[in-house]
Image 1 (tube, one colour):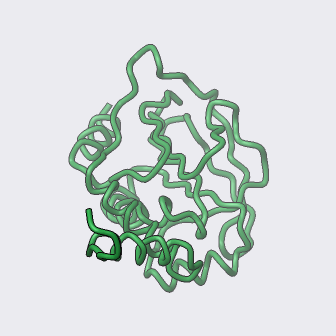
Image 2 (cartoon, helix red, strand yellow):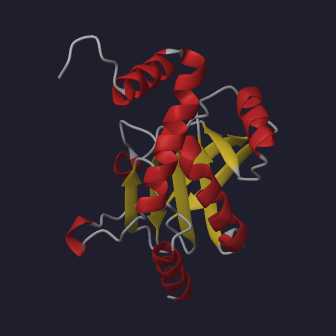
Length: 188
C-alpha cells in the first residue's frame, strides 16, 4: 500500500463515523440499521419449558388522555404487552410492524404499549409517525415475569396468562409466523 493514497473505503468509513458521532444524524442511522434487523428477524414461540405463567392481574395504567384504566392480563383474552420509548431506535424501527399487527388484531388481542415518558412527547411522536397504537403509562410495577432491563421488550400472553412469546430488541411483529401464533391463541 502506498503512503498518501486515499482509498474510497477510507473516505466512506470516515464519513460514516462522522455521521454517527453527530447527534442529529446518529438516531436516523440507528433507526435505519434496526429497521434492517426488523426485516430479517421475526419473533418465535418460547420452548414449553421456558414458558412461564403470569398470575392474572389488573394492569393499572393511564391513557394518553390522562384517564385511569385497568387492563386485565391473563384472564380470558390474548395480550400483547410492549415496553418502549420514543428515544429508542430499535423501538422506533419495530413500531410500523406493531401498528400493522394492531390494525388487523386490535379487536381480538389486548395491545398494551407502555412507556414512562412525558405524555405530550409520546402524543407528538404518535401523530408525527401517524401511529394509532394504544399507549399507556404504568401506575404500578410490572410483574416480575414481565420485567426486562432493556427496551424494546415485547410479550405475547395467551388467555390463561402463559407467556408464549418474549422478545427484546427490534423484531418484525407483522411476520406470518407471529400472525399464525396469534390466530392459534385466539382460536384456542
